[in-house]
Image 1 (cartoon, rainbow, N blue to C red):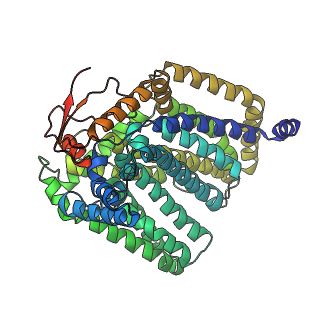
Image 2 (image 1 turned 45 degrees about the vertical axis):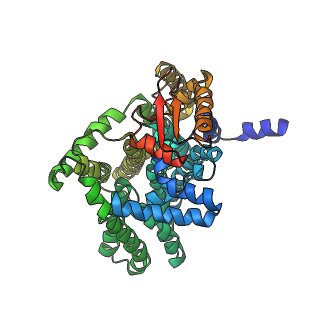
Image 3 (image 1 turned 30 degrees about the horizontal axis):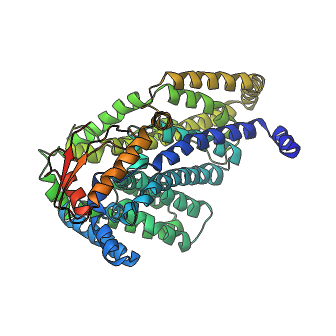
Length: 503
């Protein structure tokens, strides 16, 4: 014990701060994982998992489940939407094999978010800009906490498999794709790393159209940069990834199912008008999302980023252009929705990944602007820069403990004053403490017992007495012909499922 205490005392200020942030991050995640133990399939989980579930029930073969997932992807591509990669993974939802396995959903989604974000920031900051790893770790913890806690609809990000794998999982695949690409360029790796990117290029190109378009734009931008800079070797290595991603995206948008689905939409906006509204949404949501927590995170990261960017090996130019490009990227994520649905309400699962992209772009802009400011001051006068730098370091060194304590007290007060549905972990703790999640779990098991009775074709199930916000956002209908009722009936091989309102 003394040995560990001595080690703790020997840690630097930033290392102690990282230990605290890591503890906070783990404390944010654990209640969500525990909450996931009470989660169950809902809505499209039954629809997309149907072929796989029947294959497992009839054969008990994982190979047959895999074939059923391919069939689901093909059927969806022909008859509903072009997102063939998402459809494949949606068909592999864990309850296909066992209802108990559905609790893996938050484990999968949170792991992908943590891994992809950590990997991307490590490659960008440590490998590309040669920043000390401790600053990267601090930044990663802050961004992960924001990306978990401040989401529009966390239930669709971590607990509902179909919605989460279609958006959150694919968004993480995109970050992994660009992490591997950047690493390949920086470390001058050959085609081995290019081949590692190909499965992720297929996943992103065949994912939801927000991720698919965003990935295609970035890949095209990389291609243009390599052509402009005449990097022939890098261009040859990059081309397989670009062509694979472009082919997957083309297959996505050219699907016959897209036309069938669009027939249900009242009207599509012209492309130019859709782009205009995408930029308008970008501005509107930046205003909505820039709250007290974002400002506190910005304030917390500023001295860290200042220390991290003191000696950058790369010259940073035109920060305004970088910010404009970032805004264009963010707005492009709204374009598929504005084109398809006009100014209709945007789904929460769509906003989740756009918010996470916003947090990441916001930090990259903070990093870029502070790095540019330091380099500008150095260029104007070495003596002036040293004076400003010493003053900054002196102030932060003298008052950093007070600074951290003030921010901690401020955030604690803000969390206490925030409603339980505005922070993901607070919502989970509230529903667990009140017993709502446990009650929902028991009542779902009762429903399953009713639906699993043999020799019964028509089943009445009672409504829930509680509706935990993170677990249940879409129950079946009192109309037995509703698509959710039909999917549930088909899953348990019943003819009709009724919802009885008895509570």
